[in-house]
Length: 442
Ligand SMILES: *[C@@H]1O[C@H](CO)[C@@H](O)[C@H](O)[C@H]1NC(C)=O
Ligand SMILES: *[C@@H]1O[C@H](CO)[C@@H](O)[C@H](O)[C@H]1NC(C)=O
Ligand SMILES: *[C@@H]1O[C@H](CO)[C@@H](O)[C@H](O)[C@H]1NC(C)=O
Ligand SMILES: *[C@@H]1O[C@H](CO)[C@@H](O)[C@H](O)[C@H]1NC(C)=O
Image (cartoon, rainbow, N blue to C red; front, side):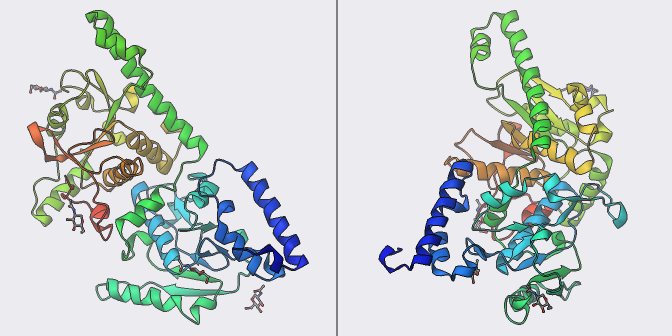
């Protein structure tokens, strides 16, 4: 540790300044977990460096803050964009560089690049919060942090069958060394990061997804949808309690615990059905597509559900006109989509990406989530729910724990219900999650 008697006067003054700054930051930002101010290694680094660089932090928890990585615009569905973003972060981490905050895409156009509606990352996710939660792992920088816009070297990502994961990894390793390492910015050109080869374990993706926190405006919209769902559930339980004079009903109303709800990500729209039928043929698996009848039946067979239970149906907008998705559910399950819930106006204010982010949050925070294991959207939700279980120190075994329950309705489980589903956090790549799987670890 620092020996005070060895310090020169200048160093002592600097150390005092650093301590003052640290105390100040501790007072100003007491609630940021993992905030850099408390890192003892950081203090020693500062004292050890020359006076002139004392106030310039070039290394933040092991990630260089003066070397950057730039990636192409992140495109496609919300889930594709999250995975692509995380892959860009992990690439930056491997190169020991700070990622220049990439543009996301607000719309879902696949081909017309000019219609992709670039939207800045910090319109959707909290920038500062990301850096504090992911401190020591990956870091984001704004373009204004660049010192010298001339020091750029381009890395052209290869493509085609001959561009193997091994070649891709070799290229990354090459760019870790000189002369490339000298450049202030490495700019990757070519395909969007979702299509890059994957070199990182599931755990590292989970670590990054945890740092993505919605900006307040969007989080508040999600909160509103969720309170509406819970309010509908409370009303239903209240009605039942008084009509049946049930003690359980009264107890539940008095209970401070929020009324539980289930979210079902129902993929039954035409596009999906065509896609999944093709997938079934190609993979020679017959448990990818589930009809709405199968979904309703399996969800109805989940054991131990309190009744009545509100079921939020996360469905494509094209299905909101389809009355049949709301009928024929097992008694005691009360299905709602955005329209019946009266929250369409909340969603309609926003472009595709934000609509999807709100639905994602509603599914993520549900007491029970049921999705399709071949959907990337469902798979990412289960990954984050599994990570939450692990963070809470809950058992990571499928059979025992009743919190953060998730199921895959496309696979038959016990008692004719859907199959319990958890992400295998030991997997060595995200491949299975990106493209769907019937291995649900339970
Ligand atoms: C990044 O570089 C810094 C400074 O050279 C070093 O201290 C740190 O360990 C490196 N971090 C990683 C993740 O390689
Ligand atoms: C910026 O780049 C130019 C040209 O490469 C170089 O001469 C100059 O020293 C650089 N400035 C800084 C602050 O790195
Ligand atoms: C509901 O189920 C019954 C019996 O299986 C069936 O006859 C009816 O057509 C179904 N109704 C809808 C709207 O799917
Ligand atoms: C999880 O993945 C690891 C590594 O691929 C594998 O060895 C293990 O059997 C998997 N566990 C389950 C429950 O599928």
